[in-house]
Amino acid sequence: MLMQVDESQLVLVDFQARLKPVMLDADAVWANAARLATLAKALQVPIWGTEQNPSRLGEMPPDLRNHCQQVLAKMHFSAVEEGLGEWLKPEPAQAPRGNARSLPRHLQKPQPAAQERQTIVLAGCEAHICLLQTALDLLEDEYEVWVVTDACSSRTERNRDAAYDRLAGAGAELVTSEMVAFEWVRSAEHPDFKLLQSLFK
Image (cartoon, rainbow, N blue to C red; front, side):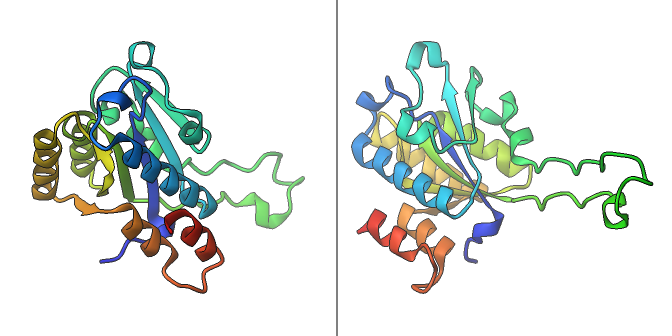
């Protein structure tokens, strides 16, 4: 099963200033998240961010934050507990404005709701805490969860790898940033293939 770009949403979990110095391979992890966010924005994939207790751990850096439609400040470790699930659902269709006589006939009917994007691509820290709990809650809510392993980290290798084992056992797909990028674009003829190449060369 390949990932579909028009069914995807990207969630960047807790890429925060005070966490970065203690994360394994932090520079590479942050860079992979930034590459994915840049490509996602070009492909019109919705991007959401979270920040765990930002008053203590700092904010998401601007190069990631600027790609996000919204950033959720949270105290629970699972972002779903703080309302992320509501953000992931499409906005309900709005009723047409005006009265029936003043609107053209095609606008008098309610507009269909936007299609729900059920594929959630997750990157972030710490893999065994906030990312894991968010992913498990999303799986429980029947989303397809894809965890970008080279854009995730923990303070220790043991904790990070235990998170991946548990996530795989729970039904999450474990992927890399390049796997996501090439599945979103699919073809060397895609208009954004050159952007992909520039990001992942």
